[in-house]
Length: 319
Picture 1 (spheres, one colour):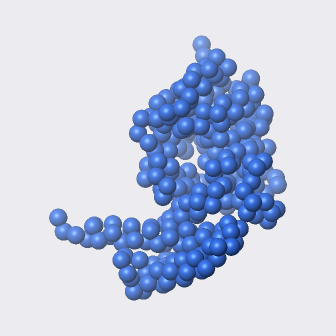
Picture 2 (cartoon, helix red, strand yellow; picture 1 turned 60 degrees about the vertical axis):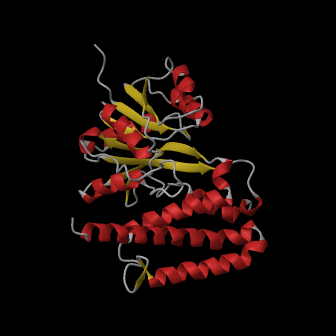
């Protein structure tokens, strides 16, 4: 009789077949012989070799392959959650390299701390060897790794106030229950999507009184691709971060006179940054980065405030 599944690893993937293969290789090397586990991979309508890559690991990994035709990170992750049968549910992504003891470290922590339901592991973003000129200083590289999910809040195992990050977290299935990710969040094929689907998901559990335990031995490298480090891509990421922060900071830039649904003082900040960004544009990407990144962040904040205003007006309109 098969043993009950102890760990369900849930991962979504979209058009990253080469990186996916690296992730699966590391998972195969990390397979804990003493534990029964399953790897649920949801292909979110990939058009590359993803299906072939998944099929090639069918014998070396306990893969459950699913296909979700509708674009949406959170939707695909929820599809995987519905199939998870393990006592512990682990989230990861298709662009990480996991340590050889990764799964064992998370599971062992869950046994040492039977009253804890959320566990987060260490994440180290890894930048590519070839970097754009504006990103070659040590200061800029440190700043960028923190933008891409660096998570090492303490050196030892223990409780933290921060939410763990989606490529390296574990939860007891008993606390997840019917809770699902908000499908209005997460990558959806657009450039201005509302990010942090897992942060919102974990936040709802924390609001119920759950605590987060950091497990430093559960370690993953997060592989950053060159295309993510163009100035345009970094600015798009700042825009999404601005949207997220606007939702979290409900009182900030949310009072006083409004123009087109957003507070006048927020418009003023955006216009000032636009002027300053235009002035430094001839001086190259390194000079442009700081101002353009701040501008993109404020524009994301502005976009979210205007969206909220539109939704409020729509809700106030009589049927």
